[in-house]
Image (cartoon, rainbow, N blue to C red; front, side, top):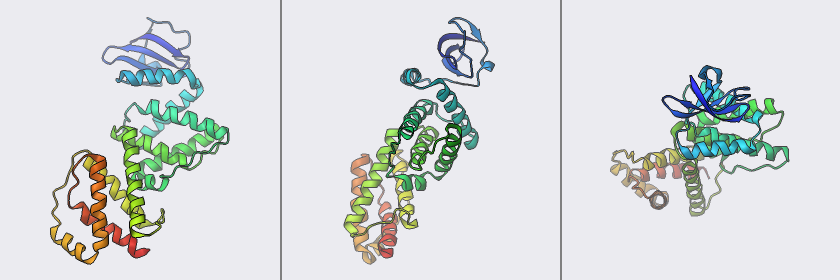
Length: 278
């Protein structure tokens, strides 16, 4: 048995748990008529989550001040669908981040305002599993709310899911995406080309950048030596090889982490494919 601490609305309340201290219980009508100090069984809840971080607890409580109760219920159902689909428990900060994002996204759509997502193809390439689940979420919400959520939102939702899966801060993920966009712009200027954002070679390059940046950020640096191949590429494709090193220096500066020399080999090969096709 848990003890009711505070009723937030008819469908959400805060309770005292013997192991986790404060927990948030959600379920249709679970808070109706409840008083602080009353006992309540956790089985009455459709979902309960801990939100151990005090700041996230406060953010969730503030969320309930402006988000409709019905939408909170819908989002709790949405979280369960994502977890069932991925067969994993998501980091609970998604309850705050994704609920807040989608609430305002739906409001904008209902007002006829469309926010463009410039990194849609890049997100799909970098996080295909999350993107697929996000697409299912959008289709489900379209039916539930009788609206037409634009495709750009799929990318934003995918980033929230990736953040909850990896326990990475969304702002860090966005910084990495912006870094990749900066690298791509430098590639286009340096090689004097316009890259097709749907081209398979471009998507492979973006996927490589994402994987490399995540490894470098985590300090997971592989120790593969590619000195012989590096010399061959330096002689055969000097423009792409020199550009690869320029990109590596930018990555080091932005990430404040060492980038392994082997990256020059992989980036050169990607650049050569792109420039050759152009």
